[in-house]
Structures are given as C-alpha cells and as structure tokens.
Length: 149
Image 1 (tube, rainbow, N blue to C red):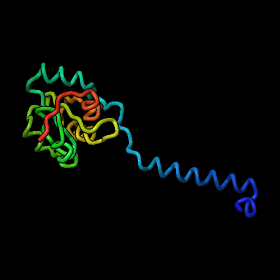
Image 2: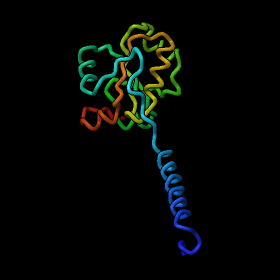
Image 3: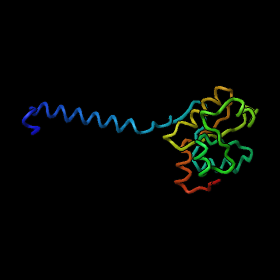
Image 4: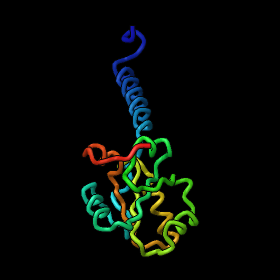
C-alpha cells in the first residue's frame, strides 16, 4: 500500500526523515559526558583516591550526589553536599584554608554534579582541587569499600 501512494524517492525520504527523528529522540534521552578535565584540577582514578585517603587523613571528600544516592552508598568519610545546594559558606565551614586538598566526586562520567561543584569552589578561590571523574560508578565497578546508611 505504501508503494501505491508514494514514489520510491518519496519512500526513501520518508524513511530517512523518520530515522532522523527517532535517532534525535534517543540521543536526547542520554546524559552528556562530564568534561575530560578542568583547568587547574587534578583528575584521579579510584586507586589514586584510596592512596590519597590513606596518605592524607585530613583529606576532604565531597560527594556531590543526591542525598538518596549518598545514603545507598558512599566513600567512607565523604561529606554529602548536592552541587545545586553547595554555597561558599558550606565549603568555608569545612575548610577555611583554600589551599587544602578537596576531592569531589558524583556518579561518574555521565554526571556533571562534581564538575559543577568544582567550578564553584574554583570561583571561590580554592586552589588544591581533585576530581574523581569516574565517581561512584567506577568505585562500585571495582568493588571498593562503601558505607551505607
């Protein structure tokens, strides 16, 4: 029946148009990737996070995820502050020393929460920022220890 109403060329154009429509709808549902790096910020792996925690007991670790995600599991000692809730006063109450190492993480490479928090911290003058870009996804994939509440 399709052949009766449309020429071959029109059929191909309709199929191509529908394909483009559906592919854009599918792509719109995917979360964007976090940037590969942030200027002046050290990016670390899960193994490097463990080394940092063991070598620097006073390391500040900020979990930028939602409270519900944090309660399901987080890195021991991590402080939960959602990126959209992070204020200068919050960070200053945790560390008034803007040269202190502060590590941020969220859900992984498809999560922008920790990179957003880092950009805020940089704008407030914090200098020694560390980004665990792989975040909770990498941590759990490697079956590293987690705290649940």
